[in-house]
Amino acid sequence: MSTYTELKGLKVKYLASDPDPEAAGDVWYNSTTSVLKTFVGRAAWSAGSPLSTARNIGAFFGTQTAAVSVGGNASTFSQQTEEYNGSGWSVGENIPAVRGFSAGGGTLTAGLIFGGHSPNTTTFNTTFEYDGTDWTAGGNINTARFSLAGAGTQTAGLAFGGNPGSKNESEEYNGTAWTEGSNLNDARAYLAGLGIQTAALAVGGKSPAVVAVNESYDGSSWTEVGDLNTARWALGGFGTQTAGMVSGGNITAASALTEEFDGSSWTEGPDLATARWYIGTTGTNTAGLGFGGSVPTPAYSALTEEYNKSFEVFTAGAWASGGNVNTARNYLAGFGIQTAAVGVGGHTGPANSAATEEYDGSSWTNGNNIGTARYSLGGCGTLTAGLAAGGHPGNKSNTEEYDGTNWSEQANDLNTARGEVSLFGIQTAAVAAGGSVSGTVQNATEEYNGSSWTAGENMGTARKSLPAGGAGTLTAGLICGGNTGSNSTATEEYDGTDWTAGGNLLTALSGNVMTSGGTQTAAVQGKTAATTEAYNGTVWSTNPALAAAHGYGGGAGTSTAGLIFAGNPSPKSNATEEFTGTTSAATASTIDFD
Image (cartoon, rainbow, N blue to C red; front, side, top):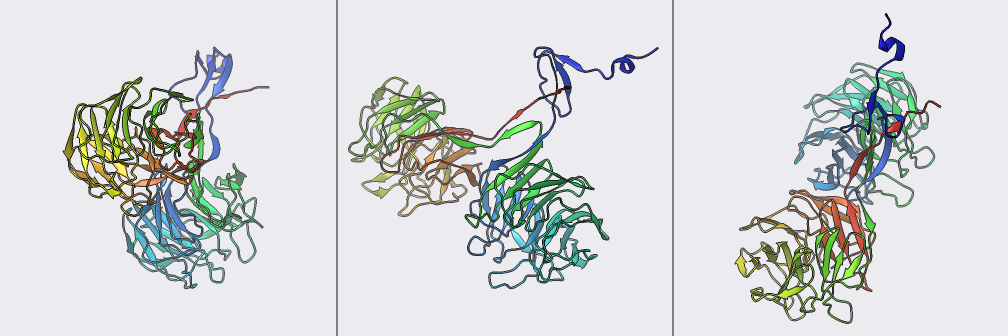
């Protein structure tokens, strides 16, 4: 007797809705929409947060969520190390010497770079190893060279090709010393390398002509395999010998091309959003990363792009325009969440402001004025339980509470009357820190219990022009930036008793704005139209850029659903920008038999 499978084929799930959780390759019939559907992978590049320093000709290694970019050129040769955490770049320890055109391999916590040259064209044979914190010297390569390629790990590395003179030598590293391996069949420089020491690829480059040559290494010898579809040099490679990728490069100009290798031949993949050569790349053929490089204008790029192949659609974090505030101003306080925020006080140019506005996620409406018009005040809390204290002119001590409708003046004011103060916490458990008294910077800390202020431990660094709203709670608070006489990078964390130093900002700032609903371990801050920064409890990293400057503006929301509004430049701004963190969503494809 025939079976069901023989007569009808494989069984297909019959579902009223798409499955959750999802799995790649699932096939089902959606009875509600009357279609046969599946989860199939899609490949795409999407924007990531930029490098803190635009550059090209650097070395690189790691994964999409734990990558390292080292050295390179940003009009001058660099010693800088940057680390990518999947969201943004933070600064690591400098390598011991400036260099460009080096190669690398390994992981964030066990990486290495080798070769390269200096600004005066000295060619290096040195190797440096990275443990995620410190650089130490490793064994020298036997043939000093630059514009070479690398593959493998810190204890099983591979170096091949390079200049001067389009070299064909390859060398293997055991974590201590380099030994000669078999030569490439085609001597070349400016090539891409990928894979591991016993299963690597050497792709493209110049010799001196631009080539499409691809060679495979088995740990013993190099063999020519399927060539690239498009010859190019200064391209980036990532992935494995049988699931490899190359992107970017230079044909006769900057290229955006991506190609994927299956072990025998190359197929076209999705283009980079921005064509460039000398691009840094790392990761796998399902989760890759491309960063930096050379573009026609400007010469050095900070752009980062993430490559994903998945049935999930990834949307990179970004700032987008929100509804304008009704009263353009700066030096105001903000608090609440992205869809229920408050902006209060500030300076309109001709006058101090008492205006209160509430944001519902799309537009601002006028609320009742605060009792005392002022600017450079601090604020924290929620739309229905807010707090404002301090301010200028005249070193205000006023403390007022907001219930979502009215402000009420409190009997007990700040002990130290001041402006440019930062507040964080909630209405019944808040902290006021720093600020200025007649221009003199302060380090005083006070705690509010919903009734009165009491002195806490002084901040480690006295400063003014802090974010009007810090982030976190009375027992886990965060402030950053400000002015000590000059702009500051200092970050301090408060545990309800003591202040301790946190990771420094990438850029010294005063008048910066924080998403005041963030936490001590997840906050976002910014000021100018340049890169904003995100904090993970240890380090600040780059975050997507604002569309415009918002110095001395208001902030609200969290690190994944933030809000920055009003502020500078002159004339005073009424713009609002909303931040949405990186998101992903499963996308089912319809199977069409037509």
